[in-house]
Length: 217
Image 1 (cartoon, one colour):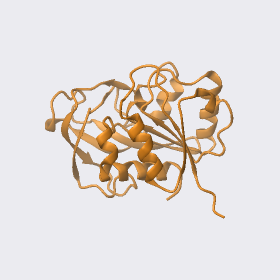
Image 2 (cartoon, helix red, strand yellow):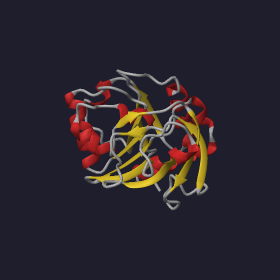
Image 3 (cartoon, rainbow, N blue to C red):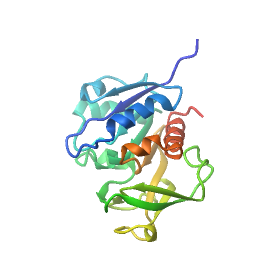
């Protein structure tokens, strides 16, 4: 009998908490052939994570891991496990330098929630190959403290001319991926509102990113 890949979905918040978290967890449970364990408990990371195909930080915020949890997450990724960050995962673990390197960038600010346009830079990746060259979406359009382009493979960028309040200019990555040790990391800044998790294109974006990070396709 085939083993069903396990996702550990972590939604702990010690700062801002997104109302969309329950809808996001429910969506992940229906996305693909995964066994989803969703938790807010940092004790879930106080043991080795070898049984997880990928760890998903889903709109986490603030400091969310214990020192032992940090060690086990590091070991998971460095030894070949997958890591996926969604939306406010970039607002997490500011006091842990490794996490900034793991994710690729840290959140700075965002304008009002509004419609805008996403430019697809790589249409061959599992997270983006279903998308049109320009994807119209509604979100918070996160700005980051610095562009992750030098250390990651950028998949999506924001067209700041399509909405009000962008602060990064012409190079404004929104989703990217990279290798970390023996592991794979995928991050998307999109996913603020519950409605996103009902959107077929966004759901396919998430599924593709998780599948890539977990080496499932």
